[in-house]
Image 1: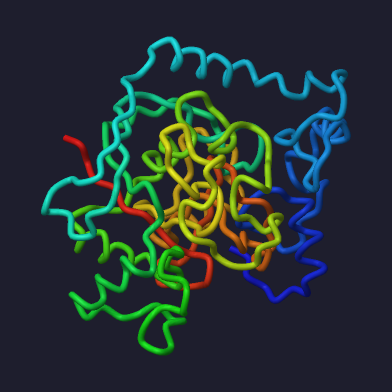
Image 2: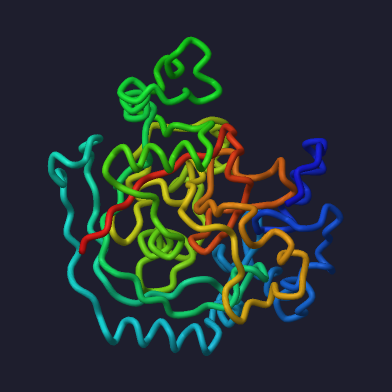
Length: 331
């Protein structure tokens, strides 16, 4: 994963050109990116409004509508999942005394959903059906207040930026950041839960209709705390009502990246096989999902808010945009 020291202007340029995530090449250009090598896609980009001018943003005129016709295989997968249907969503506020953080969790019913995407980065391919067992997941990202309770009860180390021994003033209800994968694993275990798997997280974020973002298919800076929202910091969890996922979860496209259980790996049949991505796979890096207020501009990548986005880092890393939420099996 590239983590070079780039001047902001160059970083911003790269991020606009490569609407993806952790880059594997610090000299990547549009012509080197498979997305842009397809001339039809390059022409399609001219049909769109918005900063990133992707197929995920609103079209300029009706003549461009063909850009949005989903690939035939993706359409088939979505239709099949819809045909099967799934149970109604249940929400719970108290899973019992075994959960020490005692916060609201959302029930995600068992069933298949569309995971991944054929429309962007190689390691997000292929779009494929995945069956996920029923589970519960935190409705909100873990906050500083919740994390402080964990520290006081266990003596666990504090996040890097808690220089006074507690979280920054006024940020009790903000997502805790500067936590490593090991830190968040320990928190979830203490709480009587666990980290969600990548597939659990992605289903909770996108539902079963294959959408690109928690709220639909088009980017909207008013629905999540992303770099293009120009906030420049975390926000209180649950601030974006219109940006909820189909199951009612908040901040699945911004605010803080979220660690999940798995080591970084490539999906079976991935177009990333045989490319630089492979050297980052295996028991080296853990996966983070969602986007963040900071996104990943400093790592030569771009917009990471998409439900299928896959970032990966050394599990010991702590920084100002990495957070998490916990899950619990329903069976």
